Length: 327
Image (tube, rainbow, N blue to C red):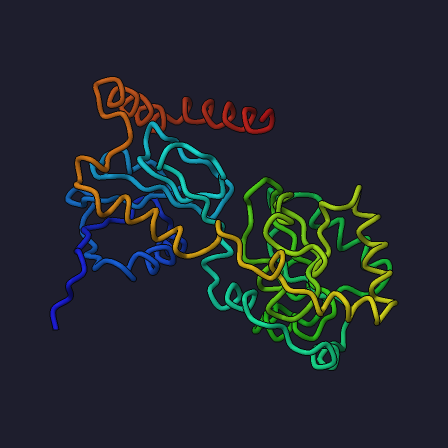
């Protein structure tokens, strides 16, 4: 039977190989539309990310997606799905990476197991699955050092592995532990990846650091929100207190993951689907948002030339790094 869904001609540009984040987001889009993947020069819509600037060569409606804490350039992109909670007309939607890990995220909405069932699984103290510390926050290694001084922290990733090699099943590994360290590689409002949800899915108590506003969405009585403490020493003191008090541990296991047990409006699928309908249901010419006048085109040409010239490219990257440090 022929589909009655509207067909979208889409190209992926600058999305990396494999384009994992773009493909995962498009699985949501496929709920409403038929997607035909075409060459970018003929695409009505260009999904692009941070792996280059080829997007500047193509005229379609540009939708920026990212799995990193990088903001869209709205002189280049028409729309963005990002970690930014920026309100810019209808052009940006806060879409944290946690939403793309559907099994783990769905677990947050389910009723929790009885405490005695969870505690029967807990044979180890704390798990940490981390593989890359390059350009990563120092807090990610410091929390390990402080907790490991109290009890051994089992590291199942490539970094500091002490369990005989990287674990094949992260979920099974984390499930054995009372606590799971869930530290993002960067701290910024809105930057919320899969780490919290995967720790919660293991029925452990997440020790979370990253999005300082996570308490707006998730119940801080159910996990250790490092942003509620003055420093990591205070965080570790709280972990030790909970570890040594079974009644307190059980109390935390009985808490719902969401504040008041209700999924927040901002994280509901309906809001995202409304955002994409606004783009794809509009007539093509009405869906553009970037400046396509001669000044907009001039900016794009200058930007593209700069990235093609190695010396200017290097200067631009240094300026961008300094700007971000100052922001």
